Image (tube, rainbow over all chains, first blue to last red; front, side, top):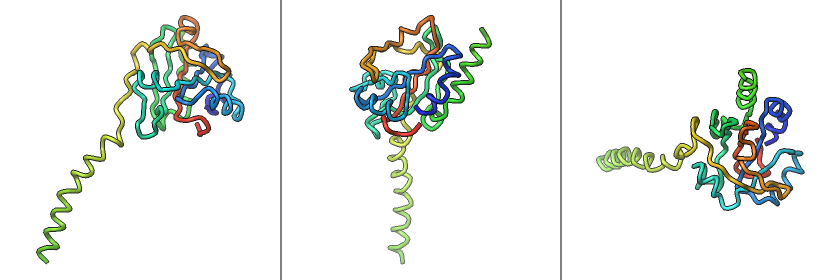
Length: 103
Length: 75
């Protein structure tokens, strides 16, 4: 999430809202957001309903896999990075900036 | 000597079976939501107690939705 925070200005300039999401409680997310200075929403999927609906529940971790989705203004998924590819948000930033230019 | 060869042969035959049994755990199934799909809507609570829905941004902004494993981990 730190990587997204570092790129937040670029993403916001490209009309993009960042949402973090995990199966942590809102209390864990609050403490973590304060610790690492994250200013965008960290959503609590307590119980994992959304994680399971997206097919991202990992029985090994008993948690979500690391995945980045880019969803366009019509609600359609236009980019996806999985697992280790999802750590660096550069692709997401580039895709957002490209979409902005193409409008 | 014969026994040794037999043991080695049996072990050699069993090994691929064991590997195959391990495999499903190592390669998780692909996500249910893929590129080109409509992202399923949700309403969840953020770290400040606010309700946030995916549809809040429809027609207004792109959404970078970043699933992470646990709070207090890197990335």
